[in-house]
Amino acid sequence: MKDMMKKLARTVEYLKSKISFTPEIAIILGSGLGKLADFIEGRQEIPYEEIPNFPQTTVVGHEGKLIFGRLGGRNVVAMKGRFHYYEGNDMEVVVYPIRTFKHMGIPNIIVTNAAGGVNTGFVPGDLMLITDHISLFCDNPLRGENLDDLGPRFPDMSKAYDRDLQKIALESAKNLGIELKSGIYSYCKGPSFESPAEIRALRLIGADAVGMSTVPEVITARHMGMRVLGISCITNMAAGILDQPLNHEEVMETGKQVEKKFSSLVSDIVANWK
Image (tube, rainbow, N blue to C red):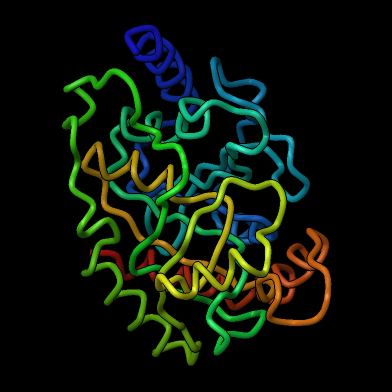
């Protein structure tokens, strides 16, 4: 942990030497949702490979760069490409960017993802406001030594997703004429898609959507006191709901179809952030 803190300090020192402001909000862009970065004005792009100690992404649809600039009249940084446990990364690597953002002085984070619809009332292309999550069977990113400088040993997750920010998101969607569903996101390790039996089990315990990211990042952000807003793009129906196989190409294609709606919504949320 102490070695990790030294690495963070080097990463933050480098990033601060490259930018002239501290972002108010960090935005993690999920698979197929990177088009939002084009809405950022005065963009300054920093490839992950140039950032000391920063991990590298290996997944199609995750370009691997931080984009600094202004969105909705606010200073932001967008993470175009995230890190997943299924890539073979340790959890410390998966959540390294979140700890970097906090140590840069960024207090807020928007997490987005491509997710499978578990709720049979959803259809591909829906956007879902994340109100809570399920992560019963996956490794916790806080496992191991706790450093009190980061946060408490046993952080509370009863309000992991900020309720005031959810109200802003719902109001933005209403004003834009965008239907924004609400629901619970379930995290599974991947990289295989879940089985039909697993999806039935997840539905029974309350999941509305399922994916292979987000929850480790949210736990880490809340551990450090960051405010969190989460949005899922339902890119496909989960296994067993439709009589067809699942593939990553469908995820990417649906992301492209909703990119304008998604980008407009997130931009308006940022503009109305309180």
